[in-house]
Image (cartoon, rainbow, N blue to C red):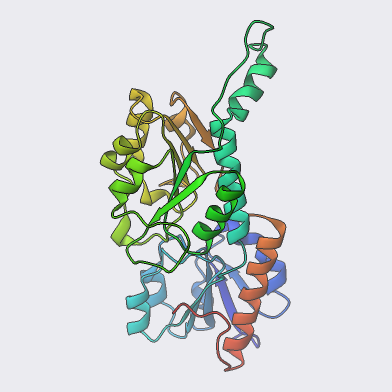
Length: 308
């Protein structure tokens, strides 16, 4: 048995956390090998909150007493299941929502002003003296925001700075300055640009359906900085190919990493590899909260940022 608390990092992309955790804990990495020899020692799982929780593994770790999400989101965690087992869950809220909102505006600019396709034209020689691309101004366009949490509010503030109008929809009214649409469908109909910034869970899988995409229409732009499963990806691809949706800009996908062949012949599309919140400051903030939560837990103190 180790003389230091043992933690198990679950996903390979969290490997850079290892040296920070190793300063205080015995660290195991699930992708290297199942930690059978340490099953009785492991007290905390360090996970990406969007990844499905491995319940079968947890059943084999008798002394596990914390799930520590490195991320703000925790949509892969079955909270009821954890509560039934007295297993607390922590996360990292409030550290990268401004960065995600910046990225959302970058996606809007890249798509609406055709920055990415313009870059390709310059590099390929498609730009000629006779050809100049004309794009729409952002000023006066209506941005509809799905979900008005920290990210949604930050997107709204930026949209106003770009002279755009803001409308939003979420399941519960909020006391904010921007009008709330009566329904998601009404929001899509009223929007030139629809930004998906809601928290994901099993209740809103496929929320952005074919009906919503049709309502957004052939001049509309869909931006997703939430989770891939919130959008019906097959319907989205079909709508872009058919021209019933004008454009899409995505930072998140149903399967990650996404299969590049899936998008190879899809027009009017800007893609980024789930990097909206991946800034130096954002990652440092998440690391700080992770370390604080682990320290508090093993010291028997109140957790810094428990999931409510």
